[in-house]
Image (cartoon, rainbow, N blue to C red; front, side, top):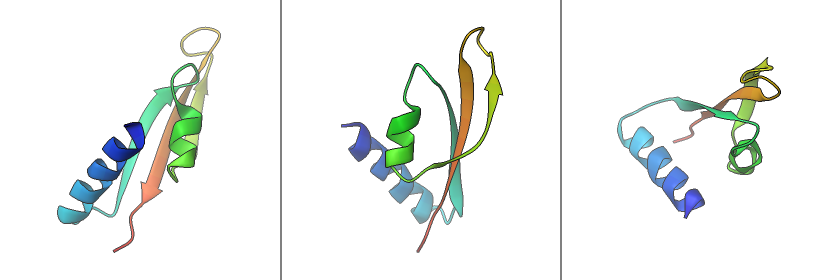
Length: 63
Protein backbone atom coordinates (compact mmCIF):
# COMPACT_ATOMS: atom_id res chain seq x y z
CA UNK A 1 0.00 0.00 0.00
CA UNK A 2 2.85 2.39 0.83
CA UNK A 3 4.51 1.83 -2.53
CA UNK A 4 1.25 2.50 -4.35
CA UNK A 5 0.72 5.71 -2.36
CA UNK A 6 4.23 6.92 -3.21
CA UNK A 7 3.64 6.16 -6.90
CA UNK A 8 0.41 8.16 -6.80
CA UNK A 9 2.25 11.12 -5.23
CA UNK A 10 4.97 10.93 -7.90
CA UNK A 11 2.38 10.72 -10.70
CA UNK A 12 0.60 13.79 -9.33
CA UNK A 13 3.91 15.66 -9.09
CA UNK A 14 4.62 14.84 -12.75
CA UNK A 15 1.16 16.09 -13.74
CA UNK A 16 1.97 19.35 -11.94
CA UNK A 17 5.32 19.53 -13.82
CA UNK A 18 7.41 19.23 -10.66
CA UNK A 19 11.06 18.34 -11.14
CA UNK A 20 11.34 16.35 -7.94
CA UNK A 21 10.09 15.60 -4.47
CA UNK A 22 11.58 15.79 -1.00
CA UNK A 23 10.47 14.39 2.30
CA UNK A 24 11.65 13.87 5.83
CA UNK A 25 11.36 10.93 8.19
CA UNK A 26 12.91 9.56 11.34
CA UNK A 27 15.14 6.49 11.67
CA UNK A 28 12.40 4.71 13.66
CA UNK A 29 9.90 5.29 10.84
CA UNK A 30 10.72 4.41 7.24
CA UNK A 31 14.09 5.53 5.82
CA UNK A 32 14.74 2.15 4.18
CA UNK A 33 11.31 2.19 2.54
CA UNK A 34 12.07 5.54 0.90
CA UNK A 35 15.48 4.32 -0.29
CA UNK A 36 13.74 1.33 -1.92
CA UNK A 37 11.39 3.78 -3.64
CA UNK A 38 14.38 5.51 -5.23
CA UNK A 39 14.84 8.43 -2.84
CA UNK A 40 18.35 9.50 -1.88
CA UNK A 41 19.39 10.95 1.43
CA UNK A 42 20.34 14.62 1.22
CA UNK A 43 21.05 15.09 4.90
CA UNK A 44 20.15 14.25 8.45
CA UNK A 45 20.08 15.77 11.91
CA UNK A 46 21.82 13.59 14.48
CA UNK A 47 20.28 13.12 17.91
CA UNK A 48 16.91 14.60 16.93
CA UNK A 49 14.87 13.49 18.69
CA UNK A 50 17.40 12.50 21.33
CA UNK A 51 18.94 9.14 20.51
CA UNK A 52 17.64 9.10 16.91
CA UNK A 53 18.23 10.66 13.49
CA UNK A 54 15.94 12.89 11.43
CA UNK A 55 16.48 12.14 7.71
CA UNK A 56 15.83 14.24 4.60
CA UNK A 57 15.39 12.58 1.19
CA UNK A 58 14.88 13.69 -2.40
CA UNK A 59 13.95 12.14 -5.71
CA UNK A 60 14.32 13.75 -9.12
CA UNK A 61 11.49 12.98 -11.49
CA UNK A 62 11.89 11.89 -15.10
CA UNK A 63 9.36 12.53 -17.80
